Length: 594
Ligand code: ADP
Ligand code: MG
Image 1 (cartoon, rainbow, N blue to C red):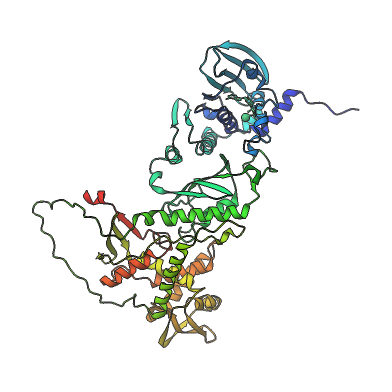
Image 2 (tube, rainbow, N blue to C red):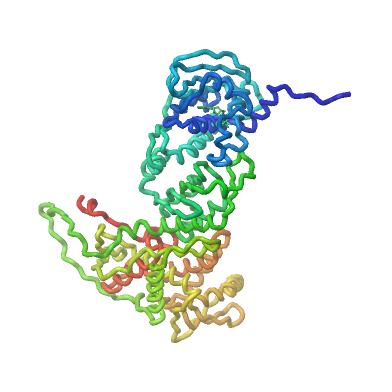
């Protein structure tokens, strides 16, 4: 008995359709891409019921001739094959003339199109892959594709659709992935009669704001880089605007949205030390690479790609983002020229200025640098200066070695004032800088601790060694951390059992608080080791820096403040404390005027 049947075309088409269009968002993507391929400068998307009952895309692109308007619904009908070389390979691979055939197999479609230069347009109606009618029609130049009742003949698919809110959110995400990178094209999205987006052609930043709201403008830094291998253009969020979810993270390659865990990791890596736990940066970054350097042997309907130069790309991207978030704000804003004179305006009538108060340095002085500490700092500055003169190294496979150029210049002596025992105010040409003394000091100490692992150790020997005791479990943990602690300038001996003797500490540690310092450090370490991505050394240094830093309420002398400001500006990531909080706010002249 023969049991093999040939599937009727309609069934075969429906099955194939499922691969291209599995939900309304899939059809939206295909239609928007076709409109862009037609060279449109304005594309309008209209939806009803999250695309279930209506998806309509109108473009002002090149349009189609009478016969093309019929042909385009045939499987393997495409005008793009001869152009495949110029197009991003994964774009055309696997989509060779399949989309419209697929959509027409599972919906009622009406096409109205008029070719550039033609007097009259054409209207084609097709339903379940059968052409119902074709006639001349008056219509504007370009194409309108109207897709009604998606999956009308595939109940299984239709029943699988989620609530409108869910389907609409898929469509919106598709819309963002396309419109973000094609910001030179105007787009709109209307749902159930309500215009959700109206995006005029413009810069990428304008597009980001159009999609995610105007405040984004203040929250992003530009990321730019150009090498033989790749051209990078985009935006990444300032560390203080990180989010608790990995929401707004967009990578594009040659104009197409991609998912690439390693490249995403490269971006996030640039934020190491800058973000609080469980926070993620937002980014919108486009890469241009030679299509020949992309491996296309990857499933075409997926957003995954493989690059030949994976490693180098990773390093370039990371360093570009790092430079963007570390460099732009302060490097351009801070300069230590004589401050401009601000017109503060007259005092309100009857205002009696309070008598100026001078604060003394009463307490302990955290800045009495030991010689080795000074040495370290000087060495840091020297190194910074040297690196400034080095050109960006050529890209090789060792691109990991790229040095980030230093961004801050050490402050020359500008007058400082302490406010409320916790902020340092100092004038800059771009405004008035307000520096949080504790966070600033945390940043300085953290950088010193982290770097002291490789270079000189600034250690102070205690006159009387200090004994520390821990619970049995903590003692074991402490024993494990001892090698790290030695790297930071502690000299510790295990006395057996749960007792340890500390005979030297990093400069600046108050010896009466050593036990407390270690207890807190162990607590922090236990907390951090729950999260795999935090490196042990980062956690230890952050914990130590936080505890060693000067606290609010501590009065500082003029000299100390100037030193603190200078040291802060010598740090590559001066703007942020190790835990990701802002160290500096700049009050702009306009704001002072108010
Ligand atoms: P592909 O895009 O892979 O070529 P499609 O099935 O999506 O396959 O489209 C088939 C053909 O129909 C395209 O190659 C193009 O020539 C034509 N086409 C589709 N949409 C439009 C449009 N909006 N404007 C002009 N031509 C279009
Ligand atoms: Mg197409």
